[in-house]
Every structure is written in C-alpha cells, then in structure tokens.
Length: 511
View 1: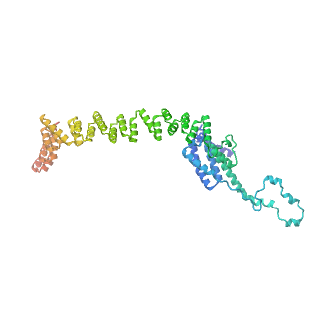
View 2: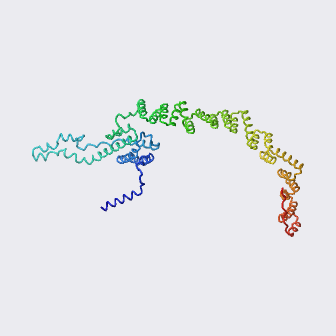
View 3: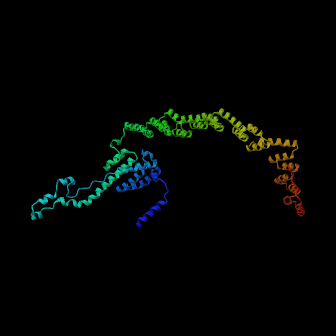
C-alpha cells in the first residue's frame, strides 16, 4: 500500500511540469523533429552495420520507423534533402547484407537433419527395444547414433539459428521503413528476405512490386493513376524525373505550384506557357526563375513591361550590346552610364550628345562644379570657365582654383580689384588681394579700411614686425606689442611699453 502511494506521488511530481492540454502526439508528427530523430539514429545504425550486429541494427531500424511512421509520407521526397540522402544511403547498405550462413551438420550425422515429420514417421528407438535380450550381443554392438548424435550439437547450432532469426527480424524492420516512406518495390525485396509479410491492410502486395528497370509505360501508368487521384504534384514530379517536362509543367500548374511549372516550361523551352504562368507570379519570383534558367529574352520582356530600363541596360551590357545599353540607360535617366556605354560602343556622336545633356542636367540641378569637371574631361576649358563664372565672383574664384583654372581665376580677381578701386571699397580690395596671395597689399588695404586687426595679421604674416607692433599697441594689445617690438629689435619701445600703465583696448571696427 505504501509502495502504491509513493508511485502515485512520483507520478504527480512528474506531471507538474507538463503543460495542461498539450498534445504531445503533434511533436511526433513534426517533420523537423522526425528528421532530427532519424539523423541521430543513423549513426548508431552505421556503427551496428560495421560490426554486423543484426540485433542492434534491428533496434535502430525500429527507432527510425517510430520517427517516420507518424508522418504518413506519400513519398520519400517529402523529407528534407540531407535526411533523405543519408537515410537512402544507409538503408541501401543495410539491405545489401548477406544472410548468416546456415548451421553446419553435426559430426557423424546425416547432412540433412531429420524433420519433425520424419521423426514421427520413423521411430528410431523401436528397433533397439525390440532386439533379443542377449547381453553379450548388446555389449559388443555399437551405441545407436540416433540417441547420441543430436545432443552434443544442440549448443553449437542454437546461436546460428538465433542469428538467422534476428537477421530476419532486422530485414522485416527494414521493409517496414521502406513501406513507411512509400517505396513498395524496395519494401517487398526486404520482406521477401525476411521471410515474412506485414499483416496490415497497408501491406505491400506483390502486384505493386516494380522491376529494377522500370519501363516508360509503367511510370506513365503510375503518373496517370496519381493524376486520377488528384495527386497532380506527385505526378508532375514523376514526369519531371523522366524528362517529360511539358507534362510536368501542365501538372504543376494544375496543382498550383506555379514556380515549378515555370521551371519545367523554361526547361522544355515552351515560351508561351512560361509567359502565361509568369503573369500570375510576383515580379521578383519570376525574375529569379528566369535568371536561373538564363532565359534572358523573357527576362528582357518582363523588364520592358515593368519599364525597368536600368535592368534592361544591364542585360544589354551583359550581352556586350553597348549601343542598345546606352539607349536604355538614357531612357532610365542615367546619363552618366549612357555616356560610358557610348564610349564602349565607340560612338563619339552619341557620347557628345549625352555629355551636353548631362551638363545641362547638372546646371539645372545647381551642380555647376560637376558640369565644369565634366567639360574639362573633354578639355573644353572655356566652356567650363563660363559655366563657373555664372556664379558669384567669390564662389567662381574658389571653384576655378579647385578645378585648376588658375589663369581664369587670376583674371577674375584682377577685374574685381579694379572694380573695388573704382568704387572705393578698400575692404573688398583687401579681401581679393588676400585671396591672390598679396599679403602686403592686403595689409595696406585693410589699414585704409580701418581694419587694424586684419592689417595686423597681414603685417605679421609678411614679417613687418615694426608695423605689426605699432598696430598692436594702437589696439591696446600690450603683451602682443611688446613681443613684436622685441622681434623688430626695438628694445626702447618694448621697455617704454612695459612701464606704461595698461590701457583699455579699443573696439575693433566692424566691416
């Protein structure tokens, strides 16, 4: 009673961690779980096969059968590629094993052991018992072989018979696996080797056994049966496996497997069927299928229908038709790619035309620097300078220097300096002189513009220490002025300034 209570408590503890209402049978029907179980058991099966241990092979085969049976496979192709390949390879190796040799006849025994029926028909001990009771004759006569021979051979024959029985059970389990993956021909071969047939309604019948080399008429009949059973995809795979691609495409389409239907139609070069089915597929899926099949004409049609001229141009470039690629790039608005395609096609007129359009496009977008660079690529300096001179004077000057049009930049600077003199704008003149590298002239102009701080920088830049020191003293920058006086060698002015009381710095002039 106490033992029963302990068992109930252990059962309750085990049940606590299990979620309520969960159907654990679904785990066994999960293809990924079944594949994992099959793959994990194949290693043990291979090891048992290498040792010729039929009992362990049988145990592994039964575990594999438990994993596959709940899936109710209609074909072994429903398994994933890795599991299917390893399973077929291992099962075929196991099925090619020869059976164990029969038990050898006992020494002094007839080659064929007497069967039970023979023993019943020929009672061996009877003549011995019916002989005359002559003790001398009995002592001199040899012992009867019927009684002595079988007894010492029984221990040796039993392991052999047991091994044969285990082999038969192993082959029966192998046949059950082939039946579970819907391969009746190989299942029947294994069942025959085991000497048994399954006793279920799904047993493989001899009429379902196919010969090793299947004639064309047989697989066509099988495909018709599958189609009649509404298993159009299975029938299509059968046709595809035997290179009947047009029928495979038709059956795949009937089974709504449009990608496979397109693949078979393309392989059969049935362009009309492929065009028709492609209209029902998403654009990207259709493009991927056509790319893999290298059906570039149909792919081109798809791109043109979608106005995807960039991909049209890429296809033309792949075919080295650069003139057509240039036109497609132009329609796509990619003028740079179009110009390069015309270059590769050695079409100078087309290249010049596209370059002009590209310059106009860049100018409209406000990228005059890019347009100038493009014109300079053809050594059209004047046009490039004119494109930049349309900008403000300061920006044009810097862009001209950036594209190495130094002469045009200096001409622009001289014109601006003359205009500043004419308009009496010393600050504008000073800025242009500073940009052109005339630091001394810029310092004088900044002084004229009453920008002593800017003039101080320019004088210091050209090494005019005395002028710079005077400007620093005028600006109230005592320490800077003392330093500059020392640099200029004017120690008296430096000493005087060091003894002078500090002064408030005047506010710099605003430009």
